[in-house]
Length: 505
Image (cartoon, rainbow, N blue to C red):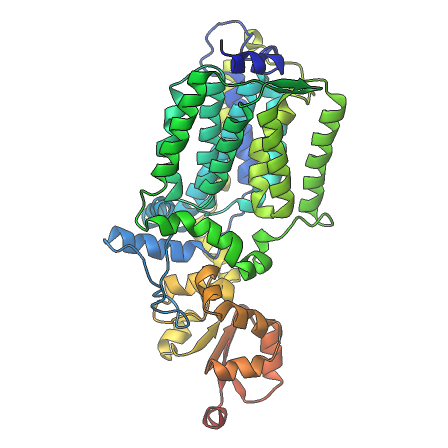
């Protein structure tokens, strides 16, 4: 065993009566498979039966272009940024979503996103059980993780980033146990990661924390650190360098590598106004779930006498800070905190392989599968839900009346219109970066905030406003004069400037 292996034993990750110490009788369908099925059922219950994510539609368009041999490099969807340089920094993750949609429609899109979310939660359960040797209490923590991660359920490219994160952590766990083979998966993992999602930067930080924590050797209270051997450190440096070099193997070169830094330091309106970049609000239900996580971490630190590795403690602090600061990173909190909590929360006796009941496990597995098949949303149901959130009914009116010039479109509809009404260039969509660079997103925010809206409408020469009927801007224009309602339903309204207003601008 290496020194790192001894450290894991000292913090109680292998001595628990569980996977490691159970009798070696082979079980063809063990209890932890049934627990995984229960976790998948819980994900299914909490997973929305809608395709409400506004990004997925332009992601599908991008994938279609890529599969036809054209890598997106400029904006072709809007009239406010048309022709401006733009990188499709999630291009690789878009392709499997496109195939799911092309093959099975909305059900395929829903099913694939449900599969990815389930896979991540099952991997969280697997890693926690493997680190602690206790699948029962790891399951309790994984159930709580579902509540934390529901914020990112849906057809999201980000899900690939979290899968890569857990695979990397599993490889690092194996390395700390003494295996030098698994760590070689990390450089090709970063090659996939950089082409799938910008969360690779967090992955590099996590890798760096684990590597740097092995530069020290000390014991301070419950915190322990053990120094890497010379050969281990050399291998980590080689893998780290290869991983950094792998980032530059992408269609956009160094610009794709620098994009996450550009977003962090230059896209201030994006960070301030997009919902997922907001901090946790402890007054709402999600905030209370996060508060429970904070209380659990503090409580286990105070009352548990288990020692903790320096790397695990630093990763826990990173996860807590990230998750509280940006709700988008609650998934990261679930991934990094789950092994820590699983090792310290003891609600059930350890798993005993000798009393396992394979037939009972199989029966439960069949029941879970039956429930998912029975309750899996139909294409018609998904379409009905879609029509409640996007202007599906009014698109035919736009096409029939050839409306496509200088239309102020609702932000969250941008991707949907680009997919289902491609002849209508949008004002803005959820690719906030490109619209923040040229000032369009700032104008949009001021319009919906009623900050000199008439001046912006004049300056942008906007002829139509295509918005939600209950939006304050629509109310303002209805009562200002100079605008006529051409179309209205429960989801959307289309207003047009009167000819006299156009003449006088």
